[in-house]
Image (cartoon, rainbow, N blue to C red):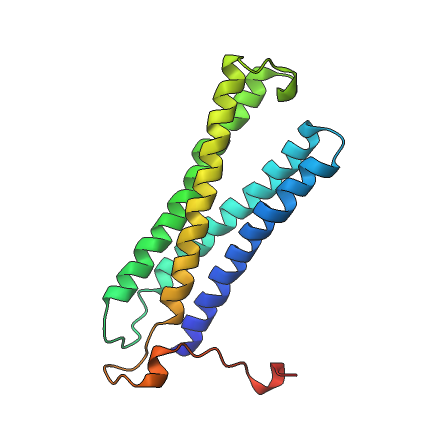
Length: 179
């Protein structure tokens, strides 16, 4: 059953890494390099769609896999993991299916680049508000994924014996991967 935990750890780490790369690399670079903010926004929107849908799928897969019995001594960790995975699924789902929908509707209603609107235009103010919601939704999912990483990595497979080596998670790599 350690294989399942390691596979879960791999999936959540891949998603968290992709979300961090998007947040700290792709989005700022797109707005810094591309010739128009409209193009940058389109690229960021497309990439965020991939991040949100992959987060939703991964969270659902991990929730399902968390019900596979592993002989853990304390089920509280499994329920904490499930709760955090629900937060990730909710954040990604809401970020894409609700917030993303409203942002796309506002872009359609505006009908021109958002930067051409006055700062006090009601549509621009609505867009800025929904954009902030999008940022907060992604941050919530990323924080939950960070916590899930530690919950999965501390999962014990024995049924009660606790030694000093059980406290520290096993991060040993196979010999084939060592240099």
